[in-house]
Amino acid sequence: MTLLEQEHEDFRTTARAFMDREVVPHHAEWEAAGIVPREVWAKAGQAGLLCFDVPEEYGGLGATDFRYNLVLSEEMSRAMASGPGFPVHTDIIVPYITTLGTEEQKQRWLPGCVSGETITAIAMTEPGAGSDLQGIRTHAVDKGDHWVLNGSKTFISNGINADLVIVVCRTDPDAGHQGISLLVVERGMEGFERGRNLDKVGMKAQDTAELSFDNVVVPKDNLLGEEGGGFVYLMQNLPQERLSIAMIAVTACEQLLELSLAYVKERQAFGRPISKFQHTRFTLAEMATEVHVARVFLDDCVRRHNEGTLDTSLASMAKWWTTELQTKTADVAVQLHGGYGYMMEYPVAKAFLDSRVQTIYGGTTEIQKEIIGRSLGL
Image 1 (tube, rainbow, N blue to C red):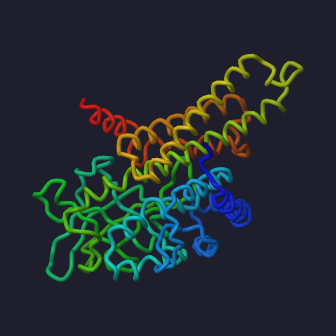
Image 2 (cartoon, helix red, strand yellow; image 1 turned 45 degrees about the vertical axis):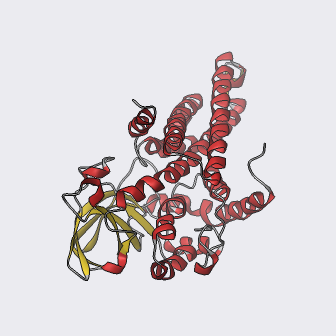
Image 3 (tube, helix red, strand yellow; image 1 turned 135 degrees about the vertical axis):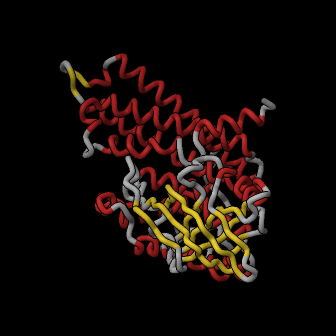
């Protein structure tokens, strides 16, 4: 059964043309600069590549079919465009506003998110908390008509460019996970500072920042959802985030397989293409099999997500297994390329570096296995 229909392939044509025209020729410059220019976001908005699930009354297309998100991820991976944080914005952050926002908040924020004029980030991770959301220390004190927010966050994707940051913070220090809320901090609020644009191993073009909040006055109108509901909201949204990461992983694996196949057919050793050696054939046979299994698993998860039946455990399975496969496939692909695989002018080297973080962000592999184990009654 084919997952995608003609309308999805039509969207692919649009997405691929945009990547080839607006992203691929400039990505190396963005890698050197450590950031994607804001005007690229605006162009993506004009092309209909951002927040297509946002309802039409707020400027979106109202296309809630997650297969469109899949197609965009595939085309970004095909182009090795790890810089533009479009999936983070569309798949992970803006859905919090769409599902939790008041009518006033939606009218205020969503049109800019769709157009690319408003770039978003979500600030969960802290220097001392890592994957432990219940261990966060960033806190906000209720001052009647506003909150006063203090704390720091790190590893925040889109952190330099972001105009809106959904901050995960404690609003009741004595209520455990029920004391966590989501506050939206806006660019220009006094006391909101951006630290370094972090120097990462891979994904060099995507801005990833340290953020600090020093007595930031946040209006009560910027509380997203109910006070104390933050932990539950995060748990509800994490399956889609993990599926989004899995989509990137599987497509990256397919790209690595293609690169490896092309290279071994051309590369000569001992008077013949290295594809003629049994070890090479067996290695690629294993890679092709694992990549195919990953694609079938992913497609099933996307179908389930569209039906509303993708649960937390299955999303965790998809996230850990596909990202671990991505790092494994990247490592094997480099080995097949030999010394050239270690040279940055070969795409496989960039794919190797970009892959490593996939098993870490969105919840580490170990966290995913813990979630699955608990679902099994262990």
